[in-house]
Image (tube, rainbow over all chains, first blue to last red; front, side, top):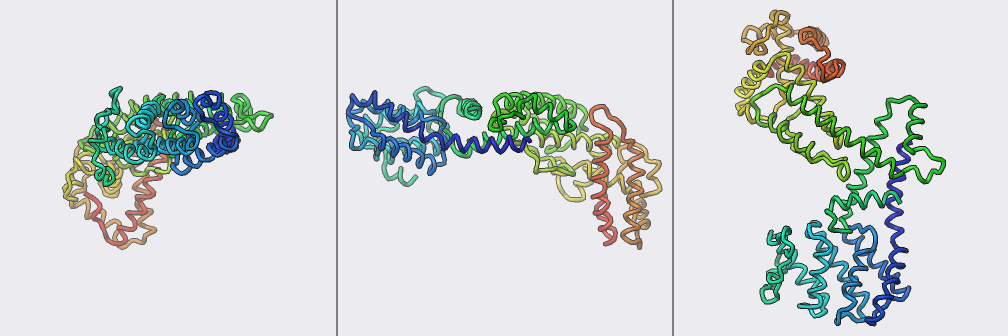
Length: 178
Length: 303
C-alpha cells in the first residue's frame, strides 16, 4: 500500500511541474493590466511563447520554480523602464530570467531573489542603459567572480556593493579569463 | 495540492525564505526527503498483523475510497512528527552509548562518537534532508551496512556499535587497549591514529586464547587477550594438519566457549538476542577467514 503512496508522490511532482504552463499563461496575460500603460502587452500567443521559453530556461539550467513569481516580478520591476520596448519585450524578459537563474546556480543559491532582482533591474536601468546582453555577460560574470573569490559579504544588507561593479574598475579581459 | 504546500514549506527552510526557485538537484533531494519520511513511518507499522495494519492505514488516511488522494498532508505531518520522535529517541540512545562505551585512546574512535555522530544528531533535519547521512563517521564497524540511509543508518550504527562495545566491555578497557597497542607495534602504525575496529581485534585474540589450554580459565586483566609465544605454539599445534572442516569445527567450539565466557545477557540498553545475533554473524565471517589462514599456515594475524 505504501508503495502506491510513494509512486503517487513522484507522479504528483511531475504533474505539478507540467501544470505550471497553463498557470503561467494566465498570470502573464493578467500582467497586461499594469503594463499596457507603458506600451507593453502580451497577446495570448506571446504569453504562451514566454511560458514555453521560461520552461526551457528552467529545463536547460536545471532549476525548479514553484509558481511563476520570478517572471511576474521581473515584469513588474521593468515595465517602467525607459529602455524596455515592446519589440524586445519577450527577448529581454527571457534573457533576464535566464541570467537570474544562471547567477543563482553559479552562486549556489546563496543570493536571495530580491537582492538579485534589485541588482539586475538597477543595472539594466543604470550602467547598462538597457543593454541586456551587457548585463547578462560582463556584469553577471563579474558578480559571479566576486562571489567565487569570496568578495561578497552576504551578512551585510548592501552586499552588492555598487563600487565594486563600477565599469571603470572592471577589467574585461580578466572577467572572461575567470 | 498537498505536495505544493509541503515543498513550499521545505523551500522556505532551505532558502531561508529568500527564494522561490531552487536547483533541480535540491528539489529532488526535497522530494526524496518526503519519500523517506513517509516510507519510514509506514514501515514502522510492519510489525502489525494484516487487520491491524489495515486499521492503522485507515486511521492515517492512507486507505481512502478516492484512490487519487492516498498521499495527503496529514499523512506527511504524522510521519514527520514520528521522525522527530525517532530523532529524540536516537539522541537519547546515543547518550547511553556514550556513557557505556570503552574509553580507548584512539583519535578516530573518539572523534566519531564525540563529534561525528553528535553533529549528525544536532543537524539532522527530517523536514528537508531525512534521507541524508552526511557526517564524519570514520570509525569502522565489523559489519556496517552502507546501503542504509538517513537516521536509520545512524540507528543501525549505534546499535551495532553497542553490541560490539558490550562484548568488548566483557574483556575490559585495558585488555582491548593493550591489543590495540600491540597491533600498532606489529603494523608499525600509531595506534592512536589508526582506523581499526576494536571489536574484531579483541574478538580474534579472544578466540585464539580460547583455543589454548588457558582459554576456559581466562581471567580479566590487561594482558588477557595477548598470546604468549607458548600459546601461539599451542594454537599452531591444535590446527596443524587438520582439514578445513576440522579447523572450522575447532574454531566453532572455541567461539561457543567464548560466548559462554562473555555471558551474553540482557544488558539493559541493548537486547540480548541482538548481541548474540551480531556475535554469530561476525564470528561466522571470522571463522571462515581464520580457517583459510590456518590452512595456509598463516598465523600472523594474532598479536
